[in-house]
Length: 94
Image (cartoon, rainbow, N blue to C red; front, side, top):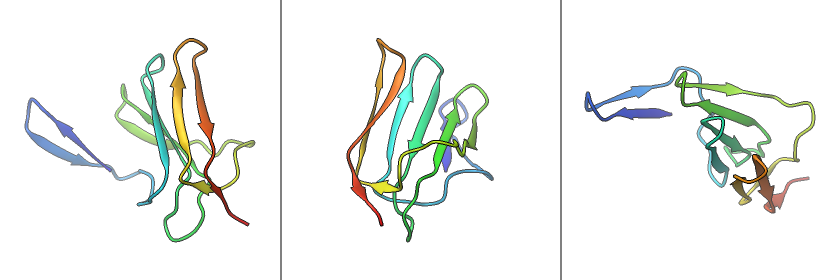
């Protein structure tokens, strides 16, 4: 993961970040100023939940004790009324 800083016109690479993947889903929680990433495929099924904190400019692997099964091609959105991240669909792995 890289972030771009407009004022300095520079890129910064993260030391701790999600692995490269495809077919994952992400959404932005505007109330908490955090990006939520779930699932995808990086050569194997993935069920990780990563949080990017805009305020601290850091990624954290949350490892929740209850989480959806590994999947790819799903969708996520932020429900601003109820302050929830909603995940729907995707292909399941055995």
